[in-house]
Image 1 (cartoon, rainbow, N blue to C red):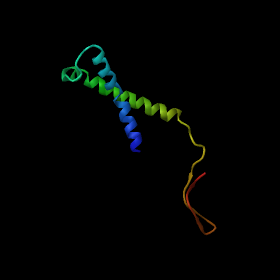
Image 2 (tube, rainbow, N blue to C red):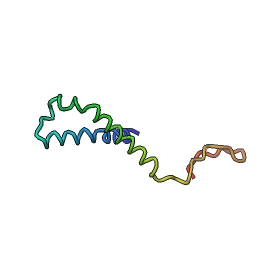
Image 3 (cartoon, rainbow, N blue to C red):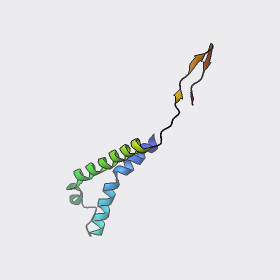
Image 4 (cartoon, one colour):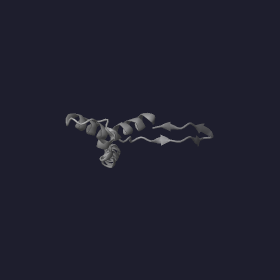
Length: 85
């Protein structure tokens, strides 16, 4: 679960990294706050859109398992543990 959260946070940071590269290429100082403050809301929105798009893509196109989980149950007086089919 932590790995998935770190991956999504990395995807969120992609627009910020691209803007950093843009600042460096255009010869601006990326440490100066006034370059970032004007674009902060756009960068956050772009990061959220990247995360949402990745979640939608994975939800729609990931492999689905035809098998399912069978919870623990009783058969002939015996407790059968849960398992994946």
